[in-house]
Amino acid sequence: MNLDLNSIWFVLVGGLFAGYAVLDGFDLGVGALHLFARSDIDRRMLLNSIGPVWDGNEVWLVTGGGALFAAFPEVYASVFSGFYLAFMLLLFALIFRAVAIEFRSKRPGATWRTSWDISFSAASILSALLIGVALGNIAYGIPLDARHEFAGSFLSLLNPYALLVGVTTVSLFVMHGAIYVVIKTEGELNARARHWTRNGIIFFVIMYAVTTMVTLLYVPHMTELIRAYPVLFVLPVLNVLAIANIPRQIHRGREFQAFLSSCAAVFALLALFGFGMYPDMVFSSPDAGNSLTIYNAASSAPTLKIMLIIAAMGVPLVLAYTISIYWIFRGKVKIESHSY
Image 1 (cartoon, rainbow, N blue to C red):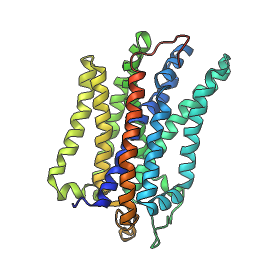
Image 2 (cartoon, rainbow, N blue to C red):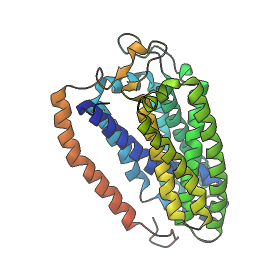
Image 3 (tube, rainbow, N blue to C red):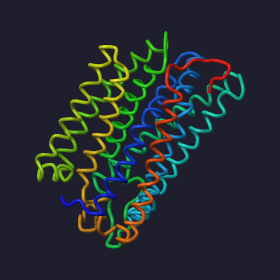
Image 4 (tube, rainbow, N blue to C red):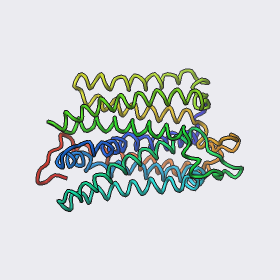
């Protein structure tokens, strides 16, 4: 496995999307759990826990999409045209989440707030599900013709494996979000969030085990690189250790360490996905010869070099912004006159 300019961009694009999954994953998980909060004040607390950071988290998605367009324009064109309806649903869900967050507290009526609560939670679950379905299809393979154009339909994207990965993604984000709520809250809501965390861990571990077995049985090309380079087997081992460390740290009352382990698990899972795909960007099934790779779908070498310089300047700015926001709004959430 040679690390050339194309591979560097593969890692960079993957890293940006992994950053999005780690960061926006927990606030999608908070949204999925939103309706489990019983009172209006508890639901407001959940919204306030992600209020200062959710929009910044989505910057990573925009940055990743921009990097994908710059480095691998043919992948961008094929995937976005083939997944057009699915991506429009995802965009609609993400926009509706933002509207629900902003509009919920504009009026005090119970019906008004409950309607936006349902919208916020449903949009969060749908977003997580669609992200997982997209990943599942890319891993399993989608029909591409000789011109690298999508030759399937929207319904063909809703295959059992993709839906399984979608539900697993929802379970991962629910666990991730529940741990975040434990960190950010106190009192009765904190106790309830601990219960959500235990159930979320169980839900995710079951889905993770099932998805792993199904992948090994029915998507064997995802393990080819690890079989070719046994040293990479350390990655699934680290992933399992990170997942196992989550309940251990929760039991010891170390919620922040559990959250870091959850972040590591999300990142490791996407790293496994990346290694499984390499050097493919989009695997074509049933004709693997039509797959889009980091070589046949990439921009020219001069473009990749210029964009790498721009990325070297831009990514640190995104990191600095993200770190500063989380530092400024650290600590427990409280409902006060100046609350978000």
